[in-house]
Length: 461
Ligand SMILES: [Zn+2]
Image (cartoon, rainbow, N blue to C red; front, side, top):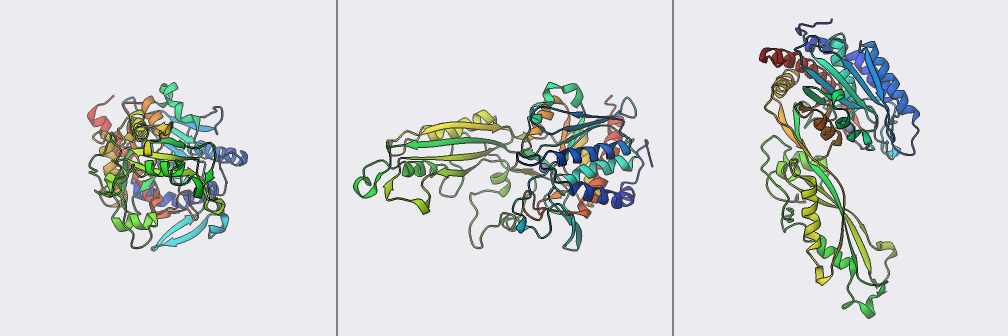
């Protein structure tokens, strides 16, 4: 079973292991490991302990738990390289999950893994069973396939508080030795659609900006004062209306937008995923990839103003909005946020100045795709799914990727895994397809085999 020569047949290994992996995935998915305030910490610890036990069983001798303030324990494991010239691969995933939300919307209890069928494929439904427990189990499957002795050195990072956000994001650069590696498999996502192997090469950056208008000391009768008294809500809406042009493209100067050259969604697929009401147009122009991944997006995510149900006939004295900006993976976060803030500060709708407060910002990420790990991963994904891998990006961010990339700046970063875009991540009825899990195990086995062989060939000792 252990095969340091790397001549393991990954498909046969995955077939042999699937029953056990499925059983372990179900065990893990039964634990409500929600690392959000207001939820008990014990299940998070229980999931941690289960995984430490599984890693120990597969032969990972060096395992420790990184305990940091204000976050759940991070499992760190290490398998030394089998030979001095073998590369080291860091395997990342997280064992915490989103809260289930409104349980009445679930077709089965969120923490009772339940078989589902979808398009002839067998799957399992439970909260967190795709995001990201499927990928924890896929990593474990790779280690099992090689009897705990894969042809590469391995560093395991299983995080316990990814969904809520964690100070662990900042930790890797403070301990670079620990995270030193040649390549990382960040398995917290998956395929653009089931059956289409996908490498995610870019993550957009994110920033928030709050904009406020104050015009009157207090509300004033709209019959007596409306028409001349400056209306704070109108001022705010006029400002927000300048953020996009007539086509719905972002109209703020200084936000980078490049052509998207990778794969992407078809328009029908996107409409379906987004749940767009029939007959409505999409926003913006150009390819979907450009609008979603290599260009900016500005979303008004909240407005404070009188609610319709409590509306009085009065001129509104104060209003504010929170804007969420997503920007090109390579744009500097402060520069992008400043572009939006400067646009708003320069407006003065009806002559009224706005108060603009920049909020949190996080960088995007764009992978270099021309190294040996990418070559190996493309070959591995083609082996696993039987068709060439596509490149996509994602609008969501994974802040830890930047922390890890800072700690190991030379390492190639690979983003793939067992999820897919129809998984219902963070939504009711989350599910994973077993065919995708199996293929991910095959891909991980084929990747480490091919990467180790390539690394040795090229003599990168
Ligand atoms: Zn996740």
